[in-house]
Image (cartoon, rainbow, N blue to C red; front, top):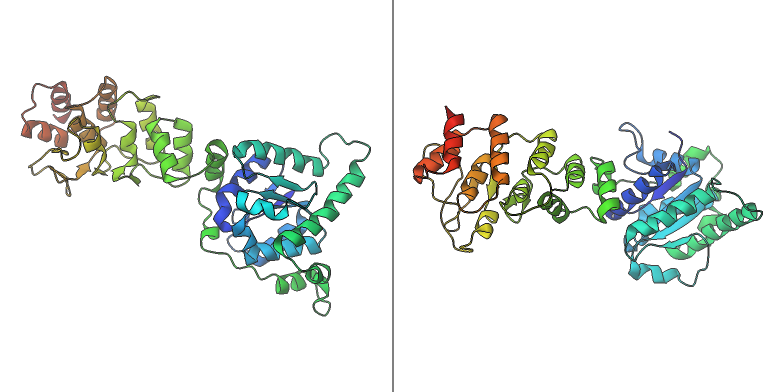
Length: 379
């Protein structure tokens, strides 16, 4: 597919690069970014050479990581030799000062938060250079000046030698363009750069929240932010992903006042493949929620043939079991009216009630409404 912008970046800075890509494409600026746009059977080097040649703008996501990357250096050398317009988006404060003395219209400083505001400016600049906004009388001259200045400034920033930039095509006897470029630009993907799973959802998360992280996923679940949770699940996170020793889905059902709809949150996890009887674990959250605090007897002892394998009740114990079992146990000492709706939904979805029923029987909690619900569905 034809593209307008080639995004050059260190694989370490991929979250920022993905956010840049998402922001530009949301405004109709077509981007090429590795590894997303490299076909499985395609040569990495050949794909990048062709992508740089086919782009109108080379966008460098600049940081210390990019500065130190041989791969980024080669991409910039190739772009400079091809006289491409090069825009620099500096995403790291400590590195931005290297070029503060360079006054060119292609430099955008995005080191200070919020990142989203800088992305908006970047979109405007890219569309301007692509000739899509209204053109003033001096537009063509200004665009030519930007192209020349871009090459000069990248030579300064990355330390690309002037001889290399000017003599890039003269380093060997004449050959076909693709052979010459590939011999000079040997690009080897790093392990992290080749993992393309969830690129688009990650980009959207970064654009919406500023970062992609385990803690960000935990906060989204805790706050029942369905849209963000869904994006995290699309990017590879799971209900069983551990955060502070507890399966992350549990943070959405703490028995405390929380935002959002708990059943809708559960449906979001189900849509991503979560099964209602999937085994979760917790060696932290249940005890944290207890009024007794640390050294409490949570999870509670449970001696039964139906006790899940790995379940260890008592001080310093470890819960293992289904979401229904966890909510039933937690709700015996702390809970809200929401628990009833969630438990009924899980029962309607076919969750196994025998284990939580055996647990309530073991502790002689036969007078609780949870017991009646478990007993009715376990028949």
